[in-house]
Amino acid sequence: MGSCFRRNDGGSPNCRTKTRLPVFIQRVNFFPEKTIIRERDVAELKRESGLSKALNAAWVRPFLFLLFIVVMWDLTIRLFQIPAYQIPAPGDVVAVLRTDWPELLRQAWPTTYATICGFLLSAVFGIPVAMLIAGSKTVESYIYPLLVFSQSVPKIAIAPLFVVWFGFGIIPKVISAFLLGFFPVVVSAVQGFKSVDPDMVDLARAMQGSRFRVFCAVNLPHAMPAIFSGLKVSITLAVVGAVVGEFVGSNSGIGYVMQRSIGTFDLPTMFAALVILALLGVVLFWVVDRIERLVIPWHVSQRDDMIFAS
Amino acid sequence: MNPATKPTEIDQPGAHLRLVSDRAGGAASGITLSGVSKTYRSRDGDVPSLRPLDFHINEGEFFVVVGPSGCGKSTLLKMISGLLAPSTGEILVEGEQVTKPHGNVGIVFQNALLLPWRNILSNVMLPIDMKRLPRDEYLPRAKALLKLVGLEGFEKKLPWQLSGGMQQRASICRALVHDPKIMLMDEPFGALDAMTREKMNVELMRIQRETGKTVLLITHSIPEAVFLADRVLVMTERPGAIAAIYDVPLPRPRSLDAMADPAFTELVQRIRKHFFTQSALD
Image (cartoon, rainbow over all chains, first blue to last red; front, side, top):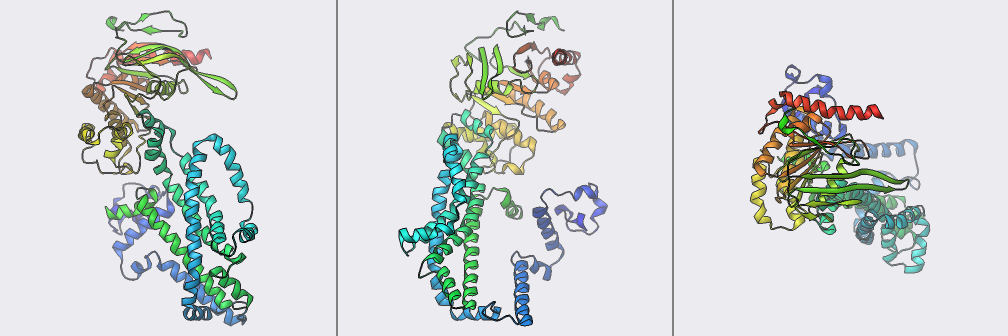
């Protein structure tokens, strides 16, 4: 059936009778992950409905797998009689999530705030720095090696320093989120700006385009996909940065909740905080992903939608 | 060879075999190169790319340059468009010396180089945006050009939705939209398959005839050069110099049948000999 997943076969089961190419050629697939899933989805949507249709919704499969993991977790705890101060049972975690939900939500707010501020700072500083690095060999030779070097300094080690400098407020968390999120933005954006076809720039310059106009019309849009992949890494790292900032010294935030619950062996609360953190990361990532779809609908990674739409 | 187009031989340093047609051309129109050479500076010292070149391309002429790879053909193209300054000599386009990008050229590269985020029509309009010309005035022209190359109805499509040949047609429209006097083409059909390539050659001749542009086309293919050109410039290996300039004695308009003409095969053979004798000498 593998060869039947071509879109124009109309899902007919005996497609081999009207193949235009030998079967082994039809199976050659240059983008295995993308096309196979897409074409299979199309073929199956046409052929079947009900259960398999429900299974094909993007969120269903990971959700099922998560459910499986939770069940295994619960079974393992019961089977080996692991005490609650080592690993809490999923039921206890859910119970804490339900009873302490308002409190957890209130504590999630400063973390979210620090993450978003740090992330925005890394975008606002990272993209122009990348422009400078990509635009000038001199700037690159001065800045880039230092930037790479600075990455080998563990942020967690210097986070206490920010507490010394800026106290227990929001600023050390923002800085720590910024420091973690900054580097991926710069690296991706530099790569994006540098991968522009020099012929394309020549072409625009030959039309008497000023440096600025050529940059806006060619270089910047070209770098957008790379910038967004950097931003997606950055947003998840910014969450980590904010929590690290809260670990070191704070009296609010999810990091603080985790720190405190570890101190009192209140593991269900600690796990509940973890769940909140994961949710926070996923939601923020999803937001960036949505923005990407709005900004670069033309990019290869977004073309699936266009095929269905057209 | 036809006596009417027999080239006359002129002795000149820097070209070991130079044949120049006695066709007259005014210096105020077309492209004039006098003593133009290019040497790139690199860490290992100077690398000569082009030895001094002298030639003139008439207005409305289809001028084709053939040469082995790395003979500095693309350098020549960049210098004429003003993107690159020659090391010596001067280039005149329409009687004016080229010192910076002058915008009086349309460029077509081997790759169509369409911007993936712009639809076909706004890709064609790119030179208008770059030159800050009034969009409204040139929009009908862009549409007319797309019609001329057979892309009517594809204005709103994105580049990836078009085949390679269609993309290259769109890039030809982009080279023509601001109505430049000169079209520079760097192996424009090198990335296309042989059948599409022949079709595009016929198409290109029609476009050139209908628009009356001066065309400077660079290619590796000798038959393609002879088929398209009014005159063919043969270049030597690196550092590039003029080996010869030939008049093409085929009447216009030409169809693909012109390739069966004895004059065609004779000229192709003659040009091919340049490259064989050269490599035999090495």
